[in-house]
Image (cartoon, rainbow, N blue to C red; front, top):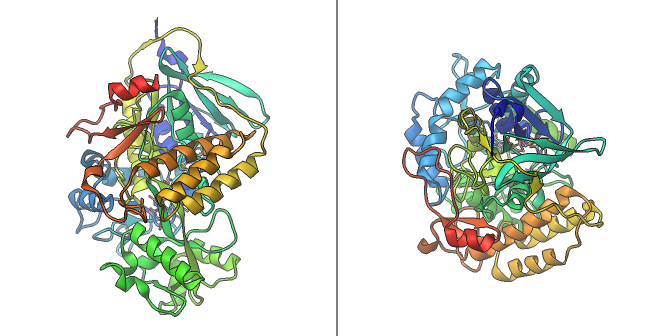
Length: 534
Ligand code: FAD
Ligand code: SIN
């Protein structure tokens, strides 16, 4: 064992969305930080976020009400302690962002303007630039990080492996834009790599959302959780593009109505909250209606003031125009699309994974906040809250580190199949057989098809294959329907399966909720699962 000095080895933060940037800013006064990100500083899903960030800041609101809505949306799988921790941090983190220069939209009286989104009991979503919230947040955070001399940034560098020394994450292997590989030792590694929408043919996620963090953690030996829980957003613009432009739920919050091919406003018959019902309910209703009609469902805004529509939703309006659609005057064709991963790397409420030395935050992590279905606009919130909480945990780590060689626990294995072809095959298989509706036959077909895929030459495609296989296994194991996971062959809830499921080395285990008041409570798979894994 080697005693410090810890200052020699920076905390390596992987990813520069809201989660990675928030954490880097908070940690920099305490530890050297090296932020590695595969695109430019501030890329990722964050900058595409439209609707906004949910926080109990309204005069009629409370953290308790926000927690209740989060629990309700999550269909019995939300960890109540996670909901209390994250929702409780909302008002203060909104204040931090305002102090950092995020210019949230305001009412004429100067108060924060609040939007209402699906499954929220009241208006509590703060937004900026109308529908450009993510761009404003990412820009403010990225500017602050770029201006902080204590944070070293390596942009255009992809992390290929988390390196382990004596059972502890202690570095990363990366490849820079010039194709040169580097080993970067680390006092701790934090995965903030975002989502996995590109597992599916239809997604709202930017092209880099390829499940890298989940694949990296799995290869390093950390446990995963809830991989079957993919949220399909009901209303992506149904055009030939990848990613598909999102038509925010806030558009329905402002009064847009879904109509089928006959012009019928069908959501009224599907859920008491009609067009603003829970996201999974609306997504399935659209999916079924479109299949029955043989054409896309459309959003109708023609009863709203066109000037107000374009002013409130400038980015969506522009995206529609690019595809020949006038948001205010035309039927706007929409389709469900993979949007958010509730599952990911299993962590506690301080971002600790099951592997010492490895933390995970933001969309790539699974804290239990989202359960089986994320409440709209709770993910930007989680990213900024966990960025701060995890920075506090990392500011005070043990100073004893093991000696010995740095090596991957399980190396990344590449083949020679073209990455783009393998990606496209994964996306087709997953969309057809592990998408909005699933059943045992389709999942078995998906598993066989994924097993037949050749090893790709590209690391992101290799990660997609690996995570797709684990996702299909998780979806096959959950023989019930709950939240975003709908099994056509098991359409009801099964009370016996009302728990989150962890995975370690391919073996499943039941996840117990966090003890009340315990933020740092490193999750651990049961001994039997650990043994099977070893
Ligand atoms: P991201 O912002 O996705 O950042 C991930 C980072 O990791 C990127 O910098 C990426 O380049 C980097 N990275 C990934 N892999 C590697 C690797 N191997 N090596 C190096 N770097 C890597 N949520 C809301 O709360 N409200 C909304 O209104 C909202 N709207 C959305 C609209 C759209 C179109 C989309 C796609 C998502 C939306 N979401 C919304 C979800 C939300 O944006 C994301 O969940 C959240 O921004 C995730 O933040 P993050 O920091 O975890 O990841
Ligand atoms: C949206 O604006 O509809 C997306 C919000 C979210 O994903 O939370």
